[in-house]
Image (cartoon, rainbow, N blue to C red):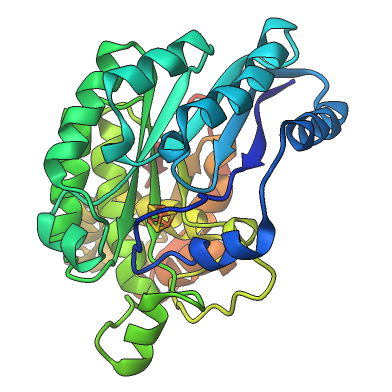
Length: 348
Ligand code: SF4
């Protein structure tokens, strides 16, 4: 049985007064027009036909800042979601919004419509990054919104971006730690992708913004992933999917867009864990040449079933890495069903 499925309802953010440098939704919104409640029903019914035997089905309002819509409009959309929830067709209602579009009146309305999950587009906890990205809200808004969301007993999700203007590894690590302190249930990590029709695109062409290269983006995401996952936060997304890139003609200029970005990050994490386990043996091996020549050089690496491909790495990159770095050792890869996600062990 599939555990979890999301019915995504994309609500273009009409009249968004903000102009975040990485976002093209204003122009997209102008093209796409309004979504109606009958559109929502159609989308939901179409998805539900394909979602049999799913433990938890969420209807999720994405695509902008839901709570920035006029209250009546929020209620209109949410009434449809609540109707589906009351009928038992869906289990949860989920939405994403901005930290400065949260107050008690808004949260009370969301509660009365049965909303369960609120994801905040935080992007960064560094005021310089927020300003350089023209987010239009302060870090204080994030702390205040998260506190209120927790107070009203919603499930909290925090979205963070990597590589925005003014960002650094230190700022990313700081953001991950601050996110942990706010105790969200879920997190998403998005490396910045430069798409057409954005200020970031113009800045890239003008040379005033330089996107991260893939290695740097993966490294930073991995460091943040470690902080968030070791605090027990469920990281529900790492990197964009191509279907997240809204609009028909986005041309990607970002080296940081990789369709398997999550696997790159989790694969690098697997390599790091295995190499750390290997280190004491390798040192010993190197200082005892004789042992190697006697054939004592086979390393068996184990992962949980779900992490086997992460252990091997995207395009076998971990296999290649270990073979090249330790040519005197022979690596074998196996599954150990006792291991949990992101746990690895070696026999040497
Ligand atoms: S990211 Fe959200 S808040 Fe920023 S411009 Fe786009 S829709 Fe508006």
